[in-house]
Amino acid sequence: MIKYQDVKQVIMSDDFVREPVDSICKNINNTSSKKIILSGERGSGKSMVLCNNEILGLGTNNQCISISFDAVGMNVLTPNKYFNEKFMIHYYEVIMCYKILDYIKKYYGLTYERYFKDYEILLNKYLTSIDNYIEKSVYEKIFLRKYLTTGELSAEIMGKFKSCLGLNTVTLAIDRFDWTNSKISKSQETLSKYFNIFDKVVITTDDERMLDESNRTLLKEKGYSFIDVNYGKDLEVVKEIIKRRIEKHNNNSHIAFPIENMTNQIYQSLIDKTTGNITLMFRILDETNSLLRWNKYDFDISRDINMACDEKVKKEKEFKKIGKPSRLYL
Image (cartoon, rainbow, N blue to C red; front, side):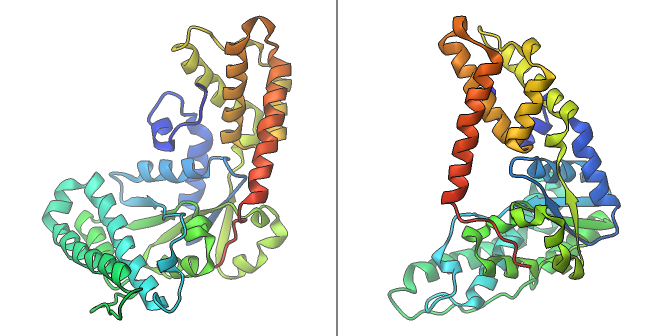
């Protein structure tokens, strides 16, 4: 199957076409801007950039913690008579602390065991009280004994982490920032308060308004800069990405996909019809591969890719119409 894989799985494999992703990471790390928005079409590789930047920073004095927050809407994070804004702030402080600790635990286990284990014990107590509050607050009057504020504990953890490892800078990278908690504005506003705790912040957005330069003015006035991720529109890059993935597929399949019949015209058509959405390109190729396996004697690569492309692009547009559009609230 010629499917798009988990980003970290791709980066650690021979499928990874490094140059375009590394180039964007260099732009992120070399810019003087402290608040960066990665903009681009959905499926253009923004998540790949953040994940790669985290890996590139390991073992250096300038590290990147790449995280994401639950996109599924939670009623408890929508201020109402049961769950107020104080609760939302407290909740995200606990979650942010967990995510920082997860990074330390994953990559710097000895440092974590020596200096940070007690923080997890404390956070577990906070999380237990949160779970208890959520379970009971609708049915009885209940209060949390302690509400953390933004940065109350996370800033302490960050400062200690930088000191222990002698780090110069730590970048916070939040993937799909505008998808957080079913895309409601209050969650974004709460998370944006963490930006000052880190030396640099990078977020990705699927807000299509940000693809238009004229819509970026207000955010630029607030100190944000934009870096576009658009290597999915580069013919040579797309050819190499698809070639590597299909070759891997062919090595594990008894029916080889005829990569040698892919012309520049076919590649360019894929780019144009998907507007550089690499994830969508792989869905199209996967569907085309199914047509090949179904009837290899009546397979025409140009015709069948076009047919699969029209179907998948149509479904993508229908999905966008149904879903709530992503919006940045900064």
